[in-house]
Image (cartoon, rainbow, N blue to C red):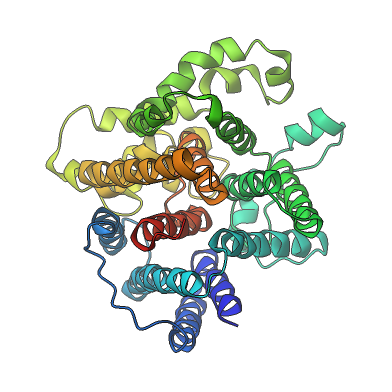
Length: 425
């Protein structure tokens, strides 16, 4: 029952952004509170110290996110909605911490539960689409959809990109499906019985189909690249050096732009591209990244802590790239299409530094467990951490529009920190 309540909370928190109606937002918060307090009676009465050695920087990062919500630049949003969003994040973080400790106390495999929670959402969403159910905020239907070039290239079928019933866009949800695919691939490689392998095959099929329907080529590439790196970890002599990749993250967009002209000559890349200009500019991201980076060439005090949520809009910078995204609803509110650049706008230099410290610590913990135990949980989490960095090169991920992805990040972060504190791995 505790796991079912947590899944219900996951759905409730996901719906907070997807439905703009204030009543539904409050209903979502009420659902979370009920699930948490019912579950609380089953949790061990363990005092939470979010400022201990293992959780200090993680807590700072969450605090900065909450402050960014309270300082939001989102237009036409009520104080009530802002407050609900901040409270929901806080409740979810505390709930997840207690929930993970409950799983540890009951000797329940945490990674299996993570996969169950995220897979249940993905497969439910896929089934709703197959049966023609639409729950989406209609504003998203006005966005330019276009055709799935991957389905056209691989299967010769002409199918438009899909906006699934429980989400408001295809790019961020494609990244979410990529994370589910990655977890499933890693766990399949270490599955111990036929029943588990069959379930993982279903997961791999559902997540791959979702990626194809959303036509998120970056998510598919990031999942494959992360899988390859993890499967070859045993052959990497200086595995410790991999944790330093986190400090290359701010430069990954520009490294990608350097390599695009080279990989753009491969026939496979040409086949899954919408145009030659898309290859040259990473689907117009080069233009967006240029506008975004120019904002930070001249230091401003506000850059230390950012402009608050939707900082690219609050700073006025996104008006520069709104013209190239004019087919979308509210193009001036579109993200910077990069994890670090979006964080700079929302939570500033200080927030980015805290994020990189948290990420470095997570990679370090995972690598130490991999070296000494070859534990599949550590391998899966390490793969996911790499995946977020690679996929985050092209998408903003952590913001509320990609909140499904952010939920996985919270879950794996708290789990990884708990494994060190409780010696679970």
